[in-house]
Every structure is written in structure tokens, then in C-alpha cells.
Length: 580
Image (cartoon, rainbow, N blue to C red; front, side):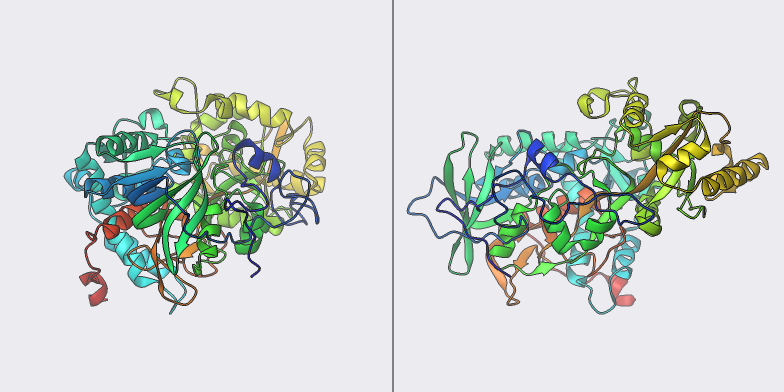
């Protein structure tokens, strides 16, 4: 692969895509043509603003030589303050002089948008009388890997360390409780900051965990630098020995790491060039991303430039909720997305009914189902009573409708969802993401479907609903409503990206493995910056991590922090796998 040239400051010929510039530069979803009407960048179109299309934003970024002098020296450097804070605080607690940098103006990265630490067997869960199903979760992850290609040691070590990670942060003083947003089994498979899921509010629940850890890092003598961008890894021979950054004032600085650099920089969901190269299934099937505009992949590019082996090609996770004509970076809690995700009549372009999955555990399966439709697109229909019907569904987690009367609603960014799903839904209708028409025939034309397909599907739906079945197409009987009164509404819906799982390959201690098969001294990766634990070619939306999502990011960072300080226990295979 052609290497990207860098200048004396280690910055590639094109600037990194961050913030609002990334939203504009990378806008455009990747649904296939055909029945679906998704959009993708035209051939030759610039991936970002600028005068030339010099180098793809997917190219590796070469490491830098040791500078003549360092601007600071630390034991441990952590890049990224989402899951990375778990590793930073743990290393500081173990006596390390720690620097954590974050390119955003506040801590948490994409992780602060999450709601549940997916884990089982923690103290708060067992004290609540819930069973420990860690073994089941680990086995489930291993069962989704390609036979013979599983990274078993790493998967098991993460799965087994997750509950110790969450018990640790709980002992530090972060009050946790079994999650209440995941349905009847939610508390058995996840924990959340206590008292933060009132009235079903799941958005940004975990922001409290990261602000808590930010304060802990300061208490332990660690250094946090916000609005500071990583611009290069520094290598001395085979070893990574430090980093180059542009600080809050735009000044270039070099910091030395005596024990290691942890890249907890997130994934590549907002970098369309990287998606096309490394996750083509997402590039061509997913309609938009909810991972956040900071998820631009430069940490991965730097790791690969430093010689890391790529892991997890074409692996990612997506939910239902991608809308045609939405910007590429689009928040999953926007009102039009929330309306589109409800339990309405759903068909493909031929009129075939599509199964609906109400349970939060199957949101990724729902995304996979939508991707399997022709054009990676399905169509949902409802009538003028949607404001009355939608709240009756009483959905879980991110399908639970946002209303302004929810306790603690101010933690949600008001500008993004207006604190009211109804307002966001109306905005989506006005801007054409949700189509509106006086007749079903007109609505079909708006969606690019044959009117006979839509009218026949609605007729069959109304007949079936009138029969009052216990369930229909997976939808509980109590949620079924006819489509009778105009105006009528329809939406082309597919999947929305949640996280990428392609990155640097690591061993079971989160040390980065080189293309030559050896460890790169001084370099660690965690969360979505690492890859290979979902199995190769694990596409079509379902990507089962050990103790998934933000807990995976937190645990892998925690493990890296311990390993750098010589405190991570040596891996041993658990008895339940030896017996199997």
C-alpha cells in the first residue's frame, strides 16, 4: 500500500476531518441503487474541502523520527478520552504519570453518547440477585467467529475482564445499577450510572461515567489536554516512544511515553474513504452514521503507518434507523429517526412484509434484516394518527421516544433533537426524509414505488390488523394500528452505523501486533481503534463483541493501562471453555 507523505510536523497533505467540516465533507450515505435510493459520493468528487484531491483520507500516516527535544515526558500516554479514560485512570492509580489527550473540547468522545455498559456478573448485578451469564456471553461471541480463525485469547480475556473493570470503577465511587432500559433481561446483561435512566431516557446516560473519570484523573495527578489533536506517532527503531500533537493553541508539541502509548481514538465511521477501503459492506449498505463526527480514523491510520497489522476487515455494527436523504453523520435520537423506527407496516420494494423486532437485543438484527432487502432499503407506512399511536408502543432504549418532560433531559444536546421527537419528526417531514401525501398512490410515487405495491400491502395490513392477532410480522397485537386516514406517511429506511470494528490487530493484552507478526513495543490499541475480535468479514451489521459496545472500549483500555504497569493478570483459559 502506498504510504502517505508527511511534512516536518507530521501532518498529512490533507487535514484531518473533524467537527462540522467532516459532516459537510463526508455527507452521503452508501445504500445500493435499485429499489433503494441511498446516495454515495460520485466518482472524482472531493472527499473534503480543499483545492486538490491529493491523497485519499484512507492512506496510512507514516510515523515521525525522535525530535531533538521533548515538550513533556510521561509514563503512559492515552489518546482519546472515551473508553481511554478507563486505562488512563487505572494507570494513574497504579502510580503512572499519565497524559490523556482529547481532540474535542470535552471528554467522552463517541462513548459519552452510549447508555449501557454491556456486562454480566458485576457486584451490583449479583447483589440484585441477577445471575452471572458471562460464560454464555463469551461463548456467544466465540460462536460468531469464523471457525478456525477466532482470536480466542483476546476475546476471552476481554470478556472475563469486563466485570472486574466495572467493579473497579464502581469501587472508585461511580454509583452503578443494573440497567433498566434493556427490557426484562437488561439488568442481567448491563449496568448504567445509577438513577440516570428515569422515564426510559437512555441517551447519553454514560456521560456521567466519563465526567467522573475526568475528575478522578485530575485527583490522581494525571494531565488532561482537551482540544488537542494527535498529528503523529514517534518511533525509535521498532518502538513507539511518543506522540506529536497540535495543542489547543495550535502549537506543535512532542510528548515522550516511557511505558507506552494507548490509541483509544475510536473508529472510522465518519471517514467515507476508509469505509470504502476497509468496510465496503457498510459503505454500500449503510445509509448514515450515529457514531459522531469525531470518528475519523486517524489513530488507525497512524497505527497502520507504524507497521500494525489490520484486523477485522469488513466488520462493523449497525442498527435500524438509517434514512434516505439524511446527512451521513446523523444522530439516532433525532425525531424523524425515532418516528421511522417505530412498529409500523414494513415492506420491501416488492411488497413483501419485513419482520419487526421489538426487543433491544435484536436492534442489530433489525439493521441486518433491512440491509438484506433489495437496495438495502425497506419502506414503512403510517397515517395521520402517528402522534397518537407512536407513544403506545413503549419502546426500549434508543427507540424510546424523547419528550421534553423527561427527567435530566438537559443532558441531551437540544440543537440536535429539540428535546421532543414530535418536533424532530415534523422537521424530517418538512425536509423530505419522511414523505407525506394525501393518497397512498401519491405516497408510492414519492417513494419511487409502484402504487399497486403500496395499496395492496396496506389493504392486506388493515385486514390483518382488523382480525386482532396476537402478533403480526413480529409486532405485538397491542401495538397494531390500521392505516386509514390521510394524510399518509412513508419512509425509506435502512441501517444506521453504530461502530466500526476494523483497526489494529492486538494480542490478548491489547498490545499491537505488527504486519511481521511481532509486537510493536510501546503501542497499544483499544475499543474501535483495534480490530479482529469480531471475526473476519463479519458484515451485515451484526458484529458481536465480547461484552460489547462501550464496555468493550472501557475494558480494553483498562487492560492496556494495567499491562503497561505490569499489573494485568496473565491470561488463563476459564474452566467453562476447558470443559467444552
